[in-house]
Length: 335
Ligand code: GLU
Image (cartoon, rainbow, N blue to C red):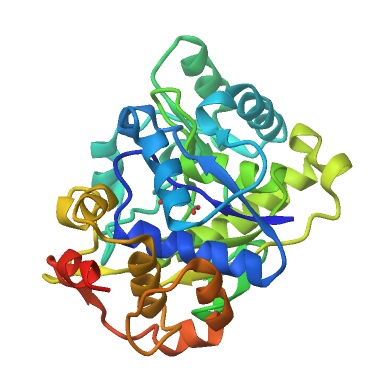
């Protein structure tokens, strides 16, 4: 069993990515496990050519190693097709013909992250007039495929898990996420589907990532169980009993203006920092400090950070509102 790096190659890694990668590496190594590297390049329009090599080079530069072959989601379509067909045959998916505008119009206004729970229009169509839905698919009408998740309030949709940083979590799947898309109308498989299947197939039992994915974890736990139940890609035979992963979600790093770090901000990307002469130990030490592992930023390598690693320390600083200054490179240069 292992942990994983699961970067999306949409640009050069920035400090926030390095921070998440370091945490994942530390967590796996503290458990005596190794790391796998999975390049999440399934969303082809978001992929930036060359970013995959930058990521590998930056991880090696940081001293964050991995074992085994690098897995590229873009090369696993045959596996995804197989698992997708298994879920569909098990009656867990339905076609959705709604446009984004139609979904927005039929939905109650949402707060916060603007995530919209699907209002169920095509689920009703599928339940009440399955022949009509099937005929529309056959006629080539543009459609996505959605997961028929438990309805809000349903007992089997109550997902409990314990996050290493945010503690006990309790989600009502139907109310919090609803019927998410597993295959988009452009034919590409969606993040939630491939990440769940890949974590299962790759024997990942330690998942560390940003807090923005906390709610997705509830869905992924549920979907993982469905994949096991229906034996998608032979998972039941080869992987049962598959250990449920441990989960840790990290506080997100913001820039000085309070906006989440993004790949667009050049001053914080590793290419820029490296060109400024920043050493990898400075980046690792800064990230270890951002994780709450040390009192103040000081240069260290990943092995030294491992000696300070404890999820309790991360938990203790989770409410801290950490803002990374735009000129952090200047501070890192002298570390
Ligand atoms: N590829 C995702 C990202 O870069 C991470 C997904 C995950 O950790 O599950 O945000």
